[in-house]
Image (cartoon, rainbow, N blue to C red; front, side, top):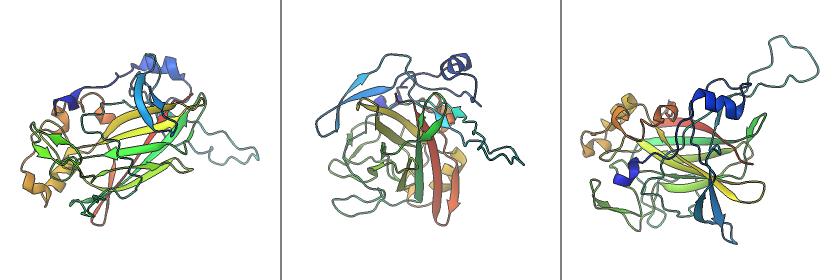
Length: 284
């Protein structure tokens, strides 16, 4: 548990970000990690080791929706959209990542037993973009891994003898990956995560993509939820069996390092919620 509170990277100042990206097309500068991780691959293409790239490389940016053409424009020549990229922070992988190799969209069940994790359904879509000098465009073929705790704060396939006090080795619930489609989208059906001592409510994710030389590069971070929404969800079963949580966004050490830029905007959908999160990768 104690390894889950170390921030990876740092936040850029506005001056640093404008210097890197250029002032044109930047609507808001929020912050990013200064390390893009490069991963060595085996002949099968599976990442096997991690090597930090030189400091100063950008690890990610989030594209805003391109603006529409000016109202009333009648020119036959398309008006170039102004692409606005907003920078996000990379955050710690934490102690619970396991590269299970589970290619699936619905991650609620344990594939070995078929048992489905209880909890409020969450339809979560990641939209991955490639950022270059002039545009943010959909990145197809990137691998997006997601892993999270269940409604009672337990992660599958790991043992925690600390504050979490659980042993779920051999189970594989709430883990999986998807490959982004031609629109850069990777969609997961999961549950609203619970909590465990020392951390606010969050979901981990990792994006892996190949650069022009075929090397695998990765971006790792976490997404968060509004505390008021978590309060509503945790008042219901099965979450309320856990008791009152001891950590909110404001006193979570990882969240304080840029978590407000990683908050999910959720929409109520029947018995659950839906959320979408966009991010861009600077891959050369």
